[in-house]
Amino acid sequence: MTTSVDLTWLSIERARYESLFDSLTELPRWGLFLDRTAVALERATHTGGGIAVFILDDPHLPNAQPDVRRVTDMLRSRLRPGDTLARLGDDRFAAICCDVTRDADAAMLARHLIYDSGLVCGLGIALSEPGDVPETLVGRALVACAPHEVDPIGAT
Image (cartoon, rainbow, N blue to C red; front, side, top):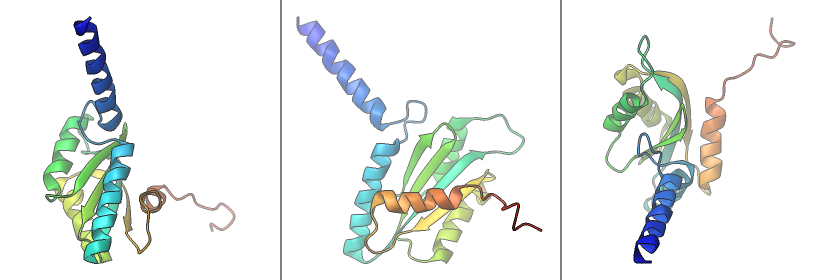
């Protein structure tokens, strides 16, 4: 009887872990990413600072075989202590960078994170604004990352 209880507890804990973290990269998933975004926003409110959310769509090394773990290691090594990297889907990553208040700071971080590492990807960046909630801030970064369609009527 004790063994089955222990196995049930282990199964529950494993399921809980897998709901929070990606099994391949051990990075946070959506739910935990939004929670960490909320914590970062709260901290920024109290310190008078700001945060930036980066959405990286299909980051990869050109002319190389797809390797999620290698890309993860490259991105993780370029973040500062206190920043968060998450895997939001098969080929989408996100980062929360704290103490970012200016567009120029976000651009410098993006260059360091992506260009300097040799990665190629779609990129969306959103800086926090007073009153932001995680879903709004991340939503703006997702919209910024979305490929823009050309209006066939307005295009000449």
